[in-house]
Image (tube, rainbow, N blue to C red):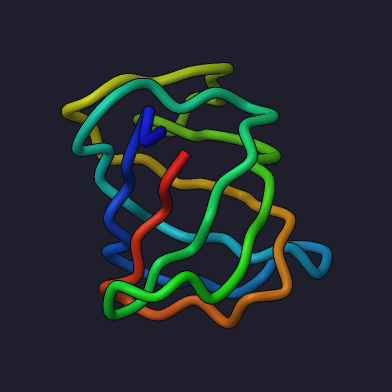
Amino acid sequence: MLKSQVNILAVFHPIQGHPLIGGEIVTGIINVGDQFKVIRQDQEIGTGTVLNIQSQKQNVKSLGAPNEAGFLVDSRINFEVGDRLEI
């Protein structure tokens, strides 16, 4: 069951091997520790875990829609703009 969704708007240089992505929370609430599926062109291409959320240059433990934020994640996916996280 889909609880939350994030649209990926930007992909940044990894931090200590972890992908850093910028995204818009379009539904629900995202929490540090949440596990997600990565969706590209309506196909699941992998999974991951939210390690950190940064909103307006502040680290936060959770953030709800509608908001844009930076997400440090644990995932082996090479993220692309347009990908979607589903939690």
